[in-house]
Structures are given as C-alpha cells and as structure tokens.
Length: 430
Image (cartoon, rainbow, N blue to C red; front, side, top):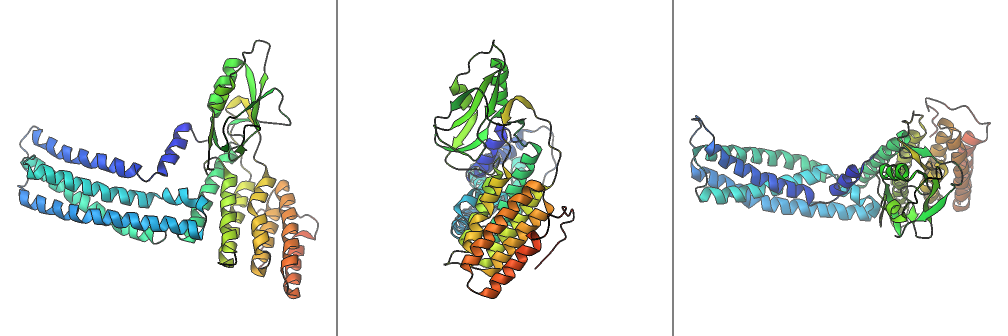
C-alpha cells in the first residue's frame, strides 16, 4: 500500500526538473572530487595528462551537450503534445514520468555542467597532476555514458507518445493499482458494511480524492477512542456537502475529534492519479478508445486494442487472491464496486463503436469471456453490459447481416444456462 513518501515520490517523478537538478549536483560533486584527488596521501603513479587535451575534450562536450539537451527537450515536448492529441490528456503524467527520457535529459544536462565546471576549473589551474588525471577519467566516463544513453534514448523517443506505447503505460499503471488494491481491498482498513453510524464529517475543498492517510486516521481513532468509517474512495469527486465519513464513539470516555484533524488525512486535488485509483485507468482507456472511434479519426483497430487491455485488466481483477490482514482495525472503508468498474470501461466504447461491426463483435467477445471466466459478480455485470452493447449496436447498424452476426455472437455467450467458470479461459470465437 503506498505510503505518504511513495505518493510524494510519484508526484516528483512527474516533474521534469527533478532529475536534471540531481544530475547538476552530482556533476559539480564529481569535479570537486577530482580536486580532492590532489590532496590524497601517497605517491600515485598516474599518467601525466596535458592540460590542453583535457580542455579540448571538455570544450567538445560543452559545445555539443547544450544542443543535444535542447534537441531532447524539443523531442519530448513533441511527444507530450502527441499524447494529448492522439490519446488523452489524462495519460500525460504517465508519459512525463517516463524514466528513459528523464534519465537521458538528466545525463545531457549533467554532462554539460561537468564540462562547464571542469573547463572553468582547469583553465584556472585548479587541478594538479592527480586531479587532471581524475578529471580526464571522469570526462571519458561522462562521454561514454552520453553515447550509450543517447542511443537508448533515440530508440525510446521513437515510441514515446505513440498511441500503442501510451495504451501500454496506462494498462501497466492500472494493473499495478489493481494488484495493490486486491491485496488491500479497503486500503488496509476494515470493510465497511451498510450505513455507517455516528456523526458525519465533511471536507472543505472541491476536487478529487487522491489519497487517504489510513495510518493517521488509525492514530486519531486510537487516541480519541472512536471508530472511523469512510464514505469515499480515492478517485471520488469531493464536495463540501458530501460527507467524507462518520465517527462512531467506542465508549463513553471518548474525546471528540476536531474535523480539521480528520481532513488532514485526505489529499484532495484537481486531478485523479493512478496510484490508488484503479478506476481511473479504466476511464482513461475508455477515453482513448472513444477518441479513436470519433468520426474524424475512425480508428477501429485502436478501440479493439483498448478492449484487449480492458479484458486483461478485468482478468487481473477477477483472478482470486488472498488479501492481506487489515492493519487498521478502527478505520473502515467500502470496497471498490465491480459494477462501477464496468460502467467506467464499456458504455462509452459501446456507444461510439456500436455502428462498427468489428468493434461491436469484440465488445461481445470481451464481455462474454469476462462473464465466463470471472466470479459471479463479474458475470452479472458483464451480461448486463453485453445486452446494452447489443441494443446500441442494433440501433446503429444498418446492414441486417451484421445485426444477425452480432446477435449470434451474443447468443453464443449468454443464451445458454450459466456455465461454470472456465479456469483456462480457452473459449475463443473470432
């Protein structure tokens, strides 16, 4: 389960300036380390490095790295713009957090700083024999690192921002959030059953719930001898009129809690994040498919690819796993509703792709396989959405043979009596 530090670290990964700043600090530290080599005891047998050769090498790096770094920034900005145009703006944080691009930019900027600082120090006779040799070795290592990183980065930037790569990043982030939520269905707390008793407390901000600090709520509950039952999940739109949860006294000796202390445990912001919100990933994938099915783009293949991602994600979610024991016995939270996950994923694609037989057929297949391989709750939700998708397609399709073909596909999965779950999920119909 993500801690406060991990949540903060994930937000830093979405900032382009963090890694280049670290690279700059390390670059300056490396040059200073070369100077310290002059003060080390002992008579080192090191080669004599001419100052002119070091200066020339540093000038080459300084003159080229600024241009390479500028080119890298321009390429990354173009990839980010492509993400918003071809996929969806909601996937932008995942593309910005790409480690290969951030590391490449950091290396290029760091190499430029090494060259500038080293050049300034060398031309002012800052180094002795040992220091010049150490700086020469550091320069060669920096140059080799730049070449290797540049080759790897060119291969990565060719894919960064491309639709297939964005879909893969969203699927991976969603699968990670799902696996984490399956281990902690209530974020480490107890399961909330039915209406919560006690007095309600509300938020004072408008935005999306990004994170709940369960450990802080547990400490408050232990201190004040109360039980806290949450009414919202990460990803919920928070408004002051909607209660965040309820506080129920455990005994007569409880101490009232200031609502401001409770609100401090809730991180509310203008945007949703993938970390603790598996439904957000489903929404983003559905947006990508809907954009691909718009009349101006008309890319049914991308929508079918997204349906494949949704199929794999629902297989991850419905795969049984033993959750870990709750850590916070005085904090309760509702579980993630499976029906709402279906609502996030399929209606938009069924609406926009109902008039394309290939998309409508794939929707029936994906929902049919989810219903066949999933647990009982998944089967009922898949069946309902398959029926809705069929009804939308019957209204949108104008070729009778396509309608009959789609109806047969639907009947293959749902007209028979409910079958036992197939562990192998080997039922395939094309």
